[in-house]
Image (cartoon, rainbow, N blue to C red; front, side, top):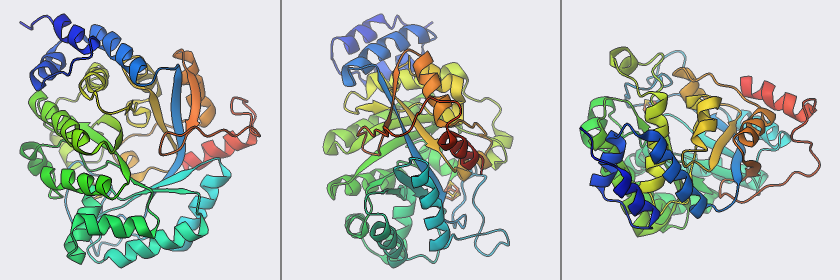
Amino acid sequence: MHTDIQPILDKAIAGERLTSEDCTELLESKDFVRIGVAAHEIRMRHNPTDVVTYIIDRNINYTNVCNVVCTFCAFYRRPGKPDTYVHSIEEIEKRIDETIELGGTGVLMQGGLHPDFNIEWYEDLLRTLHAKYPKFQLHCFSPPEIHNIHLISGLDYETVMQRLKDAGLNSLPGGGGEILDDEVRKRVSTKCNTQEWLDVMRAVHKVGLRSTATMMFGIGDRIEHRVRHLQRVRDVQDETGGFTAFIPWTFQRENTALGRKITEEPTGIDYLQMVAVSRLFLDNVQHIQASWLTQGLKLGQTALRFGADDMGSIMIEENVVSAAGAHVEANERDLRYQIREAGFTPQQRDILYRYIDRPDVDLDSSDSMKLKELSVAFAD
Ligand code: SF4
């Protein structure tokens, strides 16, 4: 028997901060529509226009070599295996040139945890790219990669982040968060623990960079773990104010060791409820992002009525989640159509949520050459 959630929703609407007990009640409730209505109201306070933003960027996975094991990952290859790769700088530049040609403003570059790359390798990469593309945003290296650099170089997180910032890094993706609770993390991964992930983010924000925060749920976690995750993100945000957005999504099971063991997956309703509760609980994070790439375009679109104000990325290349079974494709016109049909105005943005206008391109035309190219590049 669940308690009535209306007093909790009234509290949120009145501008009061929700407790972790409130958060638990909301996530346990079956009344997800009422939670969604309240979340939308709060979304309109954080972002008081009908604009829904999206970004055009490219995910470059610079290497699949990884020296840790995550049982939910279908992408990594152990060092020395025959199908490993490391992209050359020329390959990365070619992908960036294509991204710019398609109206993209940045790159989301992440990779496995390579055992041989010291901080100079990352600095050289950033410096080279920043010198060639000074206005192109380098949104790179999630906390596990920063932790790996710290282990190899012996430098503390703040020094690592300051050096990467000086070399041209613009911001950090919040990947590798999964569930920020070691009871769950230790069962599924040997990469950085909860404290280390949060401390990397503290260092990122301390040197003046912003980052996103993510959650991947459905990896054997229970509601109590999801609540602790949200609480930890909110606590760091109270300290630093450095998170631009929160992005929850569900585990993509295909081709993963964990996927063969998990019997119950989060449903579409669980996803929408998580988006809505995130919006209500994270009162200090401005943006909540819908993850259409993992949830599908239609559920991503529906999330826009459950508290999300951003549709994420036209991601031209995404190997990690596509290796694990997310095969959704969309071009810019499709994404704009979904946003408009949900009752909002689509708007391209950059990594810091600043609006980008391309007046020379007909973004909604079905026969725009640019859009066809984008679609082809996405399928690459
Ligand atoms: S999720 Fe990242 S850290 Fe974990 S195995 Fe895959 S590439 Fe390595």
